[in-house]
Image (cartoon, rainbow, N blue to C red; front, side, top):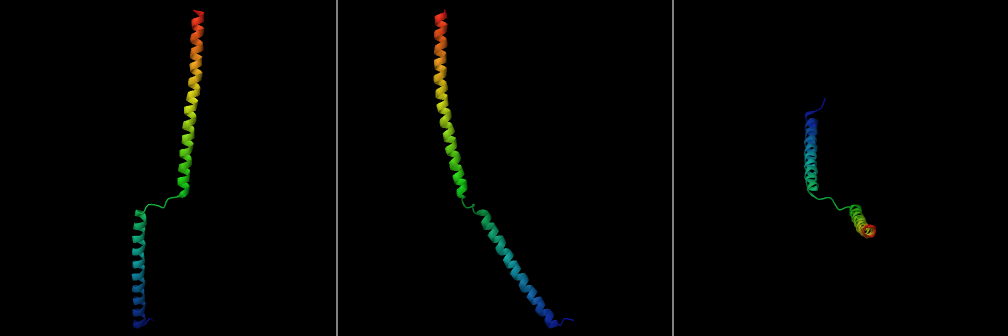
Length: 90
């Protein structure tokens, strides 16, 4: 059987442990709230990926502009050829 003194000591130790646990829980909740409101640190790989995507888009845009010029030149020549043939045949 546990004496009254031993039981009182156990109860006191338990209260202290509960107080420490409650304090730790409050610290964890407070830190979690702070972390939630902070923006995440920038990831250098994300920035590098965004840069590569931008460069790729620019390269494709340039290619399409140049291709449009090549088509325009070809079609202009084709139109001129067909108009001259039609005029020759009339």
